[in-house]
Length: 84
Image 1 (tube, one colour):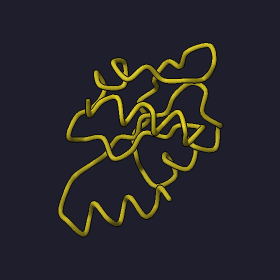
Image 2 (cartoon, helix red, strand yellow):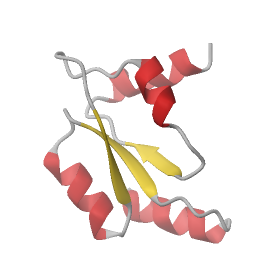
Image 3 (cartoon, one colour):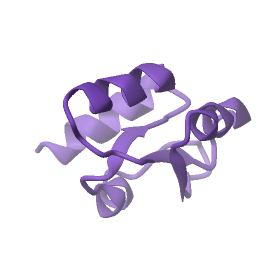
Image 4 (cartoon, helix red, strand yellow):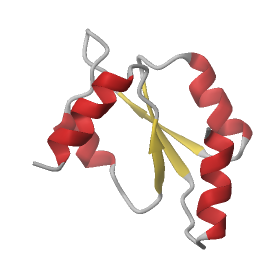
């Protein structure tokens, strides 16, 4: 998935160089991102592995390509909360 993000951003001429990786994410997430030359932006997770939307929002910049949550439901909650 990370490789696809890299190619997508190149094709639309956007320079996105960073991926947010929560502390609770599996180690292969950051390894995969680094393998295709993304810079890792660590984000502290809550004790249950969730990500507070307000914390995530602080990290969102035009350079961010993706946020790698370990649980799609938690990721969805974070994204939905940001749009309220």
